[in-house]
Amino acid sequence: MPYFGSGEIADDQDEIDYDFWASRILPLLHPDNPRDIYARAVAKMDDKLKLGGVLVAGAMTGTYLTQCYFQHYDARLYRLSYLVYVIGPPASGKSFLADLDKVLMYAMKQQDETFRKMEKEYTEKKERNEQMKGAKETDIPAKPHLPIRYVPSTISNKVLYNRLTDAVTSDSPDAMHLHLFTTETELATALRVQVGSWAGKLDLELKSFQNEWAGVDYADNGSANGLIQVNWNQCISSTQSSVLKKVRGGDLDDGFITRLALWLMPPTKGKMIDYKGDQPVEFDDIRLAPEDMDIVKMCLELSELSGRIDCEPLVRAAWEWCDNQTDLAKLDNDDCREYFRKRIPLYMIRYTLPRMVCMQYEEFKKTGKLVVTEEDKEFARLIGDWLMFASIRQWGNKLLTTWESKAEENKVREKSSPFADRYANLPETFSLENISAFYLNKKSAQSAIATMIKKGLIKKVDKNVWKKLRSDIYDISNFK
Image 1: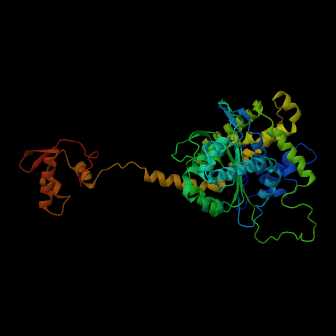
Image 2: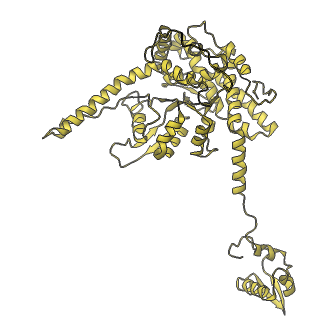
Image 3: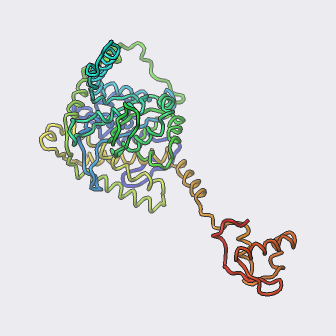
């Protein structure tokens, strides 16, 4: 059920109303504006998929703004971090993720290719020198620390830690750590490889959303020991079964799902793609079309920017959105809305900024300030509304079930044992007849009396009459 900016909710329905969401995103895309990088990136996509395309394109273009940051409404500084999941059945059109990656991440891959060649040359030279007879330690070249940032999902924790450490702007202590980036078109593949390093990967993904520091201290000589700032943006496509397996690797309410920007693919059952086998193909998987190179140029421009982005009106609009969600959660007693609302405003800002910076590039490069328009605020609200809707649709029922299960598991046991119940039901002064009512025979009742006297719970006041010395024994655990 689509969430409107005002908090109004449309009629519930089984299928997602993709036409509704398309009607909201299309007026905010300007394909005739050569500086609207989102419109350019998703131009060839079906209208129903364009919002999903924007979620992916925003994470990719935002990664180039890795040296920029903004002040959030909690008065803390945040950078542009993303964790995007495109979820849908096999062959449902999720391949747009790879299409966007080919163009938008082209510049980063080209830069990395230079560094990877240097790394390969070092490895080969090191191996040759080590194999030489009489080689000295001074003959072994120093290991280069290269900022290789585009990394595969099938990466060991050791290599990932080293990549995070090496991706810095300089060697100075106050150097800025740059974001790594991963596109994975099949989560199931990554999960099969990550069996031995699952906990470490999930921990890094949790920390990456707010650029937190992770401590590493291993005996392995090749490990990047010390504190590492985690900056790792990812765009991943997955089936429902794979993403559920991924989430079960942690804990559903450990905060991981609140860090996800989700796109849920529309159903394709009973639909056939158009025949395009007779259309000419001018460019292969490596080369880009001339119009795509314009997008690459904009990405390179973004990568050269650094410093604080002044966008206070946009931040205030995100605060107002979240304040409205808070009120709705209270009115509806909606625990799911309350759970997801807190991190979504960060995504609202992170997705709106790359769009604004591209459109205002020349002026922003000079002043570091952005003019926030009503359209920019509406764009941010759309991102917030969709992420709230998609998060609750994807996780709501599972989250409620988890909470109910944990509440039952964690319920405080009010009574320690049946014996404590029997003790509480005895009158302050009781007879053998009173306690015999709880046992099958007189001998069992007498045994219970002997035990209570031994533990100092009762004392004899008359023949076959005893007095309780405590009102209850619910805090005593060794009675049965």
